[in-house]
Image (cartoon, rainbow, N blue to C red; front, side, top):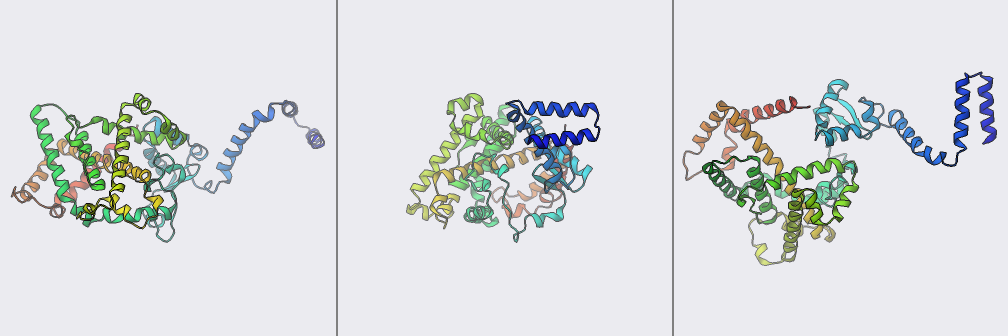
Length: 406
């Protein structure tokens, strides 16, 4: 090693390098002789190698995009965590600058081309989910967070019939009953003269629909006097937390070992989440214990989890722990998403009296006979309710979000 260093120095001398370069080489040699130099230099060397690899040698290096996004996840962290979920709008601006295919992180591409949809979701070329994305959720055994394509398909198969249009239409009586309760509760609020955040009752409504559909028993959130505002806050908190745990997945493990009281002290809405988890797990255990009860086999519409338990899935896929995680996924994916759409639709209807009146006129005709309300299938055929009405509102939402990117 000493010989090679001396040769290099001789080469430098023969090339008559400037004195500053000679002094730099001597400084490097002196630094390397220090006992802690290697230990301190390794992190910097690793960082430099990583940056060079991601910029010039990564398979994604040929795709355009911001250099900082190519070498680091910090742009995503900043826009998702600090600016609370604004990276999608930043990505939209990237496409305007760099084109339809861009690099948005060291390991990710983003494609803005509808023709690419069939390629990405091809049944002939199955793809696994990104582990970095799935690990951001504390529900690693749920179908939603399954990385392997074939395991995901195995877990999803028993659920598929429950998401068919026919099965949803069969749920109409239950949804109508909950919808009537929602209207009654809103009438109570109207008579009281007190304001209400419309997203809260919608969130209670969707939560009751989801829990009744999946487990055969609604959680009766609509019966809460104040529409349980903590429930919606809980979903928002957990949603924002996943943006953090995507970059620091170890946080999920820390939270899982913390006492419930401490989690509730950090954020009161987390106490409701812990209660929901406990309640869901207990209910799943009850379903498992009574799955062979004749009463369940006589149900005209078995619950989602009865279908899973009666499927050909291996026993390890039917544990209370895994099914409990499925309950949590349905609660978060099926409540706030729909409730948020309903809240936005309500806002834009009340902000546009002309649009609201057109919709009321159409519904007045459909509900002409109070003893024979239209079915879901009949409502789907109402022209203003289904086509231009929805498209106008979607366009309004998109324009609203685009004007509030900052």
